[in-house]
Amino acid sequence: LSILSSEERSRLADIRRPEAARRYLNTRLQLRGILASYLDEAPARLSFIVRPGGKPELARLPVQFNLSHSHELGLLAVSALHPVGIDLEKIRDMKYPSRIARRMFSAEVWQQWSAAMAGENQQLLFFRQWTALEARQKAFGYGIFATPVPPDDLHCRHFFAADGFVAALATPSSHDEPALRFFNSPPTAYDAA
Image (cartoon, rainbow, N blue to C red; front, side, top):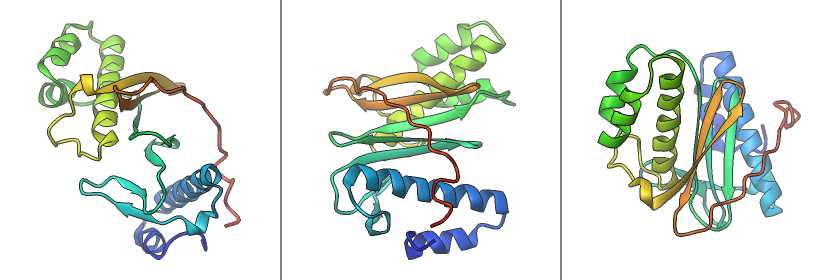
């Protein structure tokens, strides 16, 4: 726990459910370990700030990152060049997907979604559009209910992060589309910290 900041340790102490506390701890340790390896810096020396809108960033280093998790899976996007946003969702049944889609998606996306065949296709399309929306918003540190970032301002790349999980990575359209590299980081990699 020594590599965590006092704020991270305080937040960890406030988490009541053991499973949620374990997930938070693992996420923070993994985040620090991965970013530290990119920066050739000790994980404990990394200092984070939170921008208006809630997006965390490194206090004094120029690397951009964004984190998302769903159930037991997490994704971290890292870029030395430009803002990145990433979102991950487990494909699952939803109670009121049409209400959410109508409220959150653009008119064009709503029409595509509502025209899709019911069932699995519509469910997959919902989560592809949802992760794209969240990734775009997160790239610039905007909340999900803030004014939507125009889709043309960002590349949005969809992929399956694991069986049953869909993800989207958003990067500025003014840059070349990034290369994706995947690394599996075991949940216990930093248990000794």
